[in-house]
Amino acid sequence: MNMSKLKIAIIGCGGIANGKHMPALKVQSDRVEMVAFCDLVIERAQEAAKNFGTSDAKVYTDYRELLEDKSIDVVHVCTPNRSHCEITVAALEAGKHVMCEKPMAKTAADAQKMLDAAKKTGKKLTIGYQNRYRPDSMLLKKYIERGDLGEIYYGKAHALRRRAVPTWGVFLNEYEQGGGPLIDIGTHALDLTLWMMNNYKPKAVLGQTFKKLGDQTQTANAWGDWDPAEYTVEDSAFGFVVMQSGAAISLESSWALNTLDADEAKTSLCGTKGGADMKDGLRINTVDLNTQTTILPDLNAGGVAFYEGKKNLNASELEAALWIDCIEKDTQPLVLPEQALVVTQILEAIYTSSKTGEAVYF
Image (cartoon, rainbow, N blue to C red):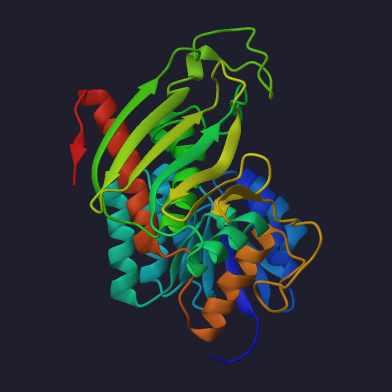
């Protein structure tokens, strides 16, 4: 493709667009330009265009009108989960590459539609799992690819908050989001764990969700008390996944839970040669010379960049840089839609299992 700047549109100009997507893309201003912004609240789109757009950036309240612009190469979908599928499929069919914020979709059926549309159109689709791009995640993946952990047969996906319920936007709205902490932050931890294990073939899922604290007041919540009347999702959720290979994964997630063991977007792994966790920085455990040994990599001391020229970027900026790379070079994105689909399938299975009281078999 020609080396003119990629023209990018942002659909949904709320918190995640302002907190991650647009600032990360701005770092790549030598390669991309944000030319269109869409939001149901026009003032948000106007503010985004002012802060991040080109001088002639266009503003919309209807994403369908935006997609009619044939000059747009890439669309970032940063809307509530319910509309991920609808907008992504429309964008792909309009000839745009799509970065969709996590989770892939509210339901597995919707996620499948997105994958089918990407295959049909030949356009690239990726999902915003930026925690893969952290230095500890990248280094752990290298250890695993080298074989240091051997066969990984057990993993734990950690997404626990003690009292950090998001009280803005539509986070508490089950209709818009499909759930609470499980689909919001549990999705990151599960993606990280599946990616490290390189295992995307689940066999069965058993799960349980709880809404035990959502009706409480005087909650000591990090962002202030939530409104119990608006709290329509779970406050914690747990799942156990058995893979076709016989490997197992446990997933723990919460926005509000009486625990001191808070960890978010982390994984713990157990293999035949060694194990790893992210509990106190990256830790690798193994046996060396008949001695239990722990390796503590110093991620603050520099070292070889995992991707040439990208060493000093944070996780969100690296995500954006590599996404642009794959479009310019016509390569596969780091987060494949096929992988993100499995994450959504497992999350949905945990919700289903909790409702029915039965395991879900694939």
